Image (cartoon, rainbow, N blue to C red; front, top):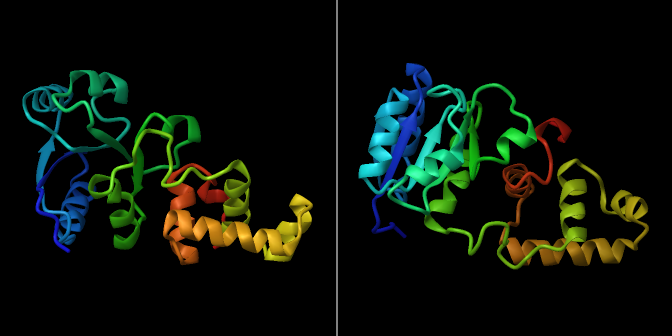
Length: 200
């Protein structure tokens, strides 16, 4: 189903190859019609977000001399603006936690589209998941995406294999994710695991 809304997206990145790659990628998503604006300075970024309702800002964390996402949100005409980091080099979790999400330059189109899904299907409240995953379910996700078998997870958590399988069914139902790839992307995007922890 094609979304009727057109999204205003700013890309704050000075490297032309990364910039053109992001623009080209976003234009391929037919269910995400977007007006894409490119900015090349802190001044033009702050001016644009204060004058126009921007839905998403994709920003290199070093753009404009380390702008803090909260500073940008305070200046924005849209209080619900989403700010995603453009991750060129590996960022630590504390840096990534400042952003609503991130896109890595090595992400393929499927990963980018999944990450931008929050524009079309926004979360209810920050920190609230589709049906609130329990801490145990997050632990299960972490083990699953790291490649552990059901038996290994059961042994690690001192629970039965049947309980592990029940948790996995509940996770699939809550998240509506039924593939290992989808679950892995979800876990990375939501900081349940770090990319370095996953066996490739």
